[in-house]
Length: 636
Image (tube, rainbow, N blue to C red; front, side):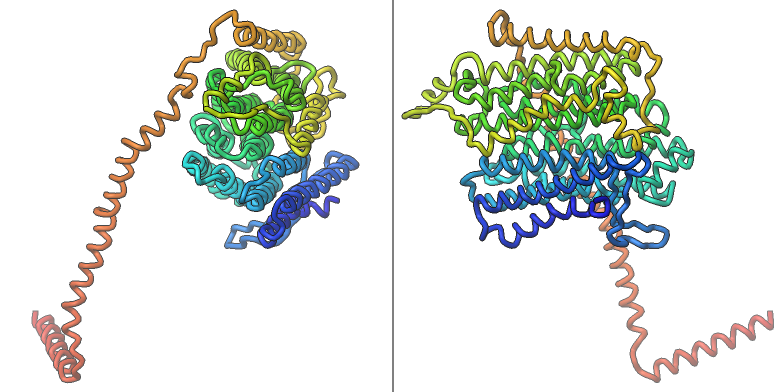
């Protein structure tokens, strides 16, 4: 199967092309089933490739496949090539697997939409782009997928573009990601100038063997991190992700759970040897920004009232945890949390979509409550996702988050404290969400009457095609922790699988206090999660204290507003000044030079009369002048 890895991205591409040609003719729901089949077929091929890899020794689990020569220019030779190894196949497994579940869910969710076929066209193109990103053999092929998911995110977030908020959110995501893309391009330029190749194997091999100077390695790592901040929504470029909630809920699940937002974590892991070869303060910067983002987003999530906005800020926070792991040298833990996060966050987003669907497109949690009896499957699966993200054992999120905190404790105690506070807040705001939506009073009755609506209004459970993905993801959210159990090295399945990729850059914490006392840290994590849940229950379920939801948190610390104010005020004036300088000074100099040359030319053009007698006279005069000069020179 390793010889057929090209099928993995090719199948979603084929689905895209078929829907592009026949989508309108297929209509609903056939276009949706075709798209789901394309993504599902890619998952089957990926699973077969994974099984083929398992049957081989660790050093044989890498396959390069050159599809064609792409750019042969001078010393720059870049192939359109794919790389299948434990990291890329891990990514491809949950991209295609969870992607297929989201495709199936979307068939029910997008029922009746006039642009049903176009939605699935974009979904397949997104899946193809994401697979090219993770399976690219070099930075340029990855960048092709990187830009592809950026473009598709614009199409999907602004899918309902007749709403001004959706159109604005799509543009915001696109522009913000372009800032991060500049960092990736600079990293490519630096890597090629230093090593002469954009191939991952060439760059990483040079970094491992001292072929890249520490200064250059640091510059490459930090430039890649800038790109990661854009795509994976870290400070200061996280602002696009909460607004991306304007897109349909399947888009939120696809972008914020399993695919696009994990791109930065993947890229930093892939280039781990370069980060390892950089100055020690470079990983510290990454870990610090990750921790700051995790805490910052968690504080905002505690005051959100939109069911999807809570999950959006939660995603930003959990991505911060992953970069905290990257900066601490815990690459396996970062990938572990990426996988478990894909399970429970996809579950939570799809669960929120089921709630919105059953509540007739209501998203305000203050108008919900007591939905567990009316939507039992949605409620049950959502609660499993809540327990997983809150860090309650034995659910998947507990094991992955604890492993990150273990490495962080060994690396930086101050950042460990930040991580624990964030974990407490995560348990708090997710419990708050569950109580407001599924427990308490049925506030949707009063909200319905406030709008002056008449007739029966009863929230209802979603159709089976939307519930099936929830059940599968709930099962994965329960069992995902089995990938990397902390009790024995023999149970570190994910670590053994990823070892050929991360062995050089993974931090070694054996012999540290954290490693020797990991069960105490495990217990501390359980206690912190329990405290967060208990406080939230006391406040929102039992009413023993007044909720603390200040406007500053509800408005995201005014950070987004400040950026919008700057860009619309001083920033706009500055850009207009630059444009005026360009038009008057730069263009003026160019145009002035052209006019000057034109003026001189018009004068000289008069000399060219076209008459032979004139040219003969000029030649004669010239000859006399030359003769006179030679005579005078001789006399002198």
